[in-house]
Amino acid sequence: MIQIQNVSKSFGGLQAVKDVSFEVAKGSVTGLIGPNGAGKSTLFNMVAGLFPPTSGRVLLEGKDITGLPTHRLFHRGLVRTFQVPHEFSRMTVRENLMVVPAGQRGENLFHAWLRWGKVKEQDRQTLEKVDEVLAFLEITHVADELAGNLSGGQKKLLDLGRTMMTDARMVLLDEPGAGVNRTLLGKIREAIQRLNRERGYTFCVIEHDMDLVSALCDPVHVMANGELIASGPMSELRRNEQVREAYLGGGASGRMGEPSAKNKGPSAGNGEPSAKNGEPT
Image 1: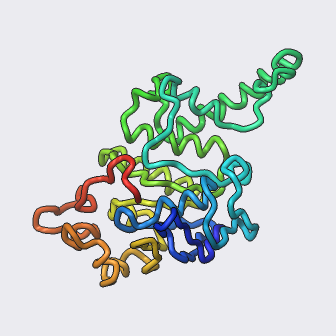
Image 2 (image 1 turned 90 degrees about the horizontal axis):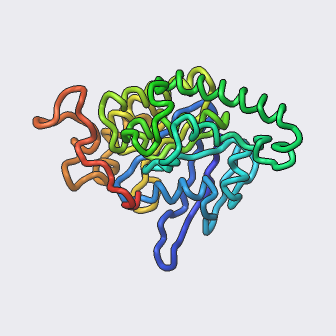
């Protein structure tokens, strides 16, 4: 689905990403992990068209999309979410979903004045889809709540809902588990799995919660200091000494999601606090 070929990015004298190559297979849920500052979000931003790479190429379904802006990638079915959700806080959840589809007739002054019947019919169809998305994500009970009043986990579900309103084929998820309680985290995990299994969505997921990565992702790619250092199933990466070294600082076992004496049981996370807003990942 996505091919990242020898991609690098420099900001002045700082090389944030260094000659990274890997693929995201169609129909997969692929993980991208690494310590803060590893270059993961910078790589996502290049794939998503926020800025071009200094060198290398990005292909979507075999076609070169290197440097294409986000609005053009949106129309090709590639979308991304952010670690900090970007909802319209003073609009309701339902309204946040309604504004997503592109090319709505009501956005055109000519149609709004002279083809009001067609505008109303399209709005009816959009509302039907909104209701279906709300039900799928089990957030119908907050449909008329202002999006700014939602909890962190509910905002992440709303982000997923907005991708569903686009019929996206390739979704880049940036830390869907960050700042989310364990109950809603389970709902987010289930929604991603169902979208992948039932609707054919392909995902690439940046995440620090190793339990969530283990439950969702195969394969998993590991970055450190801007470079790709390992790839494979999570069960193998836990035993990889280079990967464990990259996570040293608070104890490799805790950071790699292995229970320790102070952190046991199914509710254990990755052994480290979520990345702070704005902190480079």
